[in-house]
Image 1 (cartoon, rainbow, N blue to C red):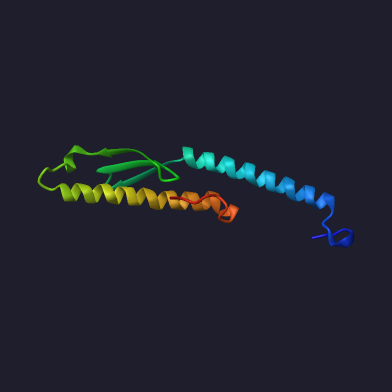
Image 2 (cartoon, rainbow, N blue to C red):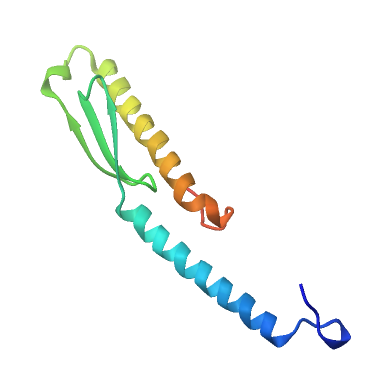
Length: 111
């Protein structure tokens, strides 16, 4: 970094840093919006259970094939729902890391 007299950073350099910070913030906000709108689909049981969420892991919907609804075996359905959610989370983590990784952890993180 270039320094002016007395060890102070030159005004031009400070302006450049401010412009870079502003640009990075704008890019981060655009990426955050993209992650809000990105559709992730988690599945389990050969798509017997499908979970829809965004790349920030906000679940928007769940579809369950009637064939896997057995009143005598609720635990199996619970396991399928959990597996589909975890599959979606794994995919969301990959998208989030790909899109936000360049910001070096500055973007709030996935819950």
